[in-house]
Length: 222
Image 1 (cartoon, rainbow, N blue to C red):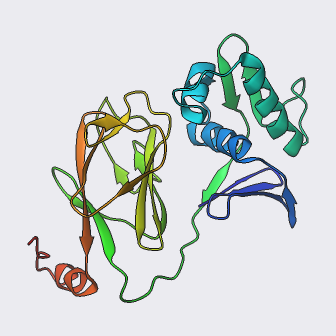
Image 2 (image 1 turned 90 degrees about the horizontal axis):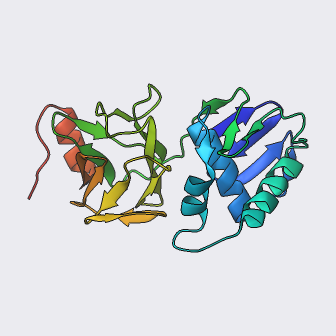
Image 3 (image 1 turned 90 degrees about the vertical axis):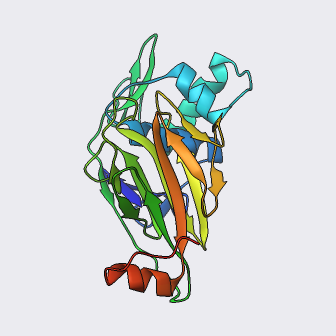
């Protein structure tokens, strides 16, 4: 998934910030901060939520966050006095205030690679290689209609046959095996996770199971 804004492109797959052909230098925490603000746009993200996301269970000073925000702004050639993309809400936090468009780039998948689906209470949803957004948004892979689910609640990445679940600073949290997650968490076939109060099961299907399911026969559950 790429996010385009102004002359910039944030490439989640390669973990790069680009301006044209030029890569802009961003450390891992600075990249994650920009990604978080883009995910939550146009909402304000409180400083406390940023610290919990970037430094879970660790105390950091206000100056640490200020330094990180300055790094992001420098990469975007932006002044805090004349923001084009990052708005400071004094006493609260920060928000992405520019126009951004998400584009999906699909990687080729080996024919013998497993396919992944989410089993919800009323339906099954196929996952695609790359990023799969979960929440109450039209561009998400699954719309979860629940007051406990945030607009951009969580995402699942399918990379090299691995399934990685990540919370997007949601209000009510994402839980795996009863524990609220604070960073990327690997999932396996049959794992049950929860977005707010919505329970979801991950299923991994062999290529022949996917074919039978697409032909109208239910895949094996054994």
